[in-house]
Image (cartoon, rainbow, N blue to C red):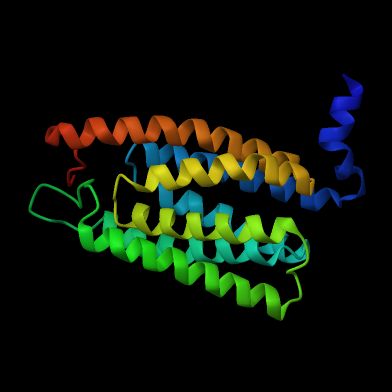
Length: 213
C-alpha cells in the first residue's frame, strides 16, 4: 500500500510546496470547468481560464513545452468561446448546441494536421524531440486543439475529442510524474462521457437549450 502511495506521490517530495498547491488548484478549477461544460453553463470559461493560466506557469517551470502550448491555446479559445456562448441567436436563445457541419469537420481535420506540424517544429526548436513521450504529446496536443475549438463553437463532437485525449493523458501524466494532473484527466474522462450523453439529450430536446435571462 505504502509502495503504491510512494510511487504515485513520491516525486512531490522534491517539489516546492507552492508548486503542489498551484497544481491542486489548477486541477480543481479544471474539473469545475469540465463540469460546467457538461451542464452547458457559461462558467466553463472563467473557471477554465484560471486553470489554464496556472498550468501555463507550472508547465513552463517543468519545461513541458507541448503541454504549455495546449494550455496557452485553451486560454485564448476560452475567450473566444465565452463570446460565442453568450451570443444571442434570437430574442430568447443563446448559441445552441449543434452537430458539426461538413465544413467544420473538414476544418477540424485541417486544424489537427496543422497542430501536428506546429508542435513538431516547436519541439525541434526547443530540442525536445528526443523520446516517445514527445510523439504522444504531439498527438494529444492536436486532439485537444480540435476539441477545444469545437467546444468553443458548441459542437457536440468536442466531447469525443476530449474523451480520446483524456484517455491518453491519464497514463501519460502518470509516467511524467504528475499524479494529481493524471487523476484530473481520469475524472475528465468520466465527466466527458456524461457530457456527451447530456449534450445529446439537449440537442434532441430544444426546450433544454440555453436561453437568455
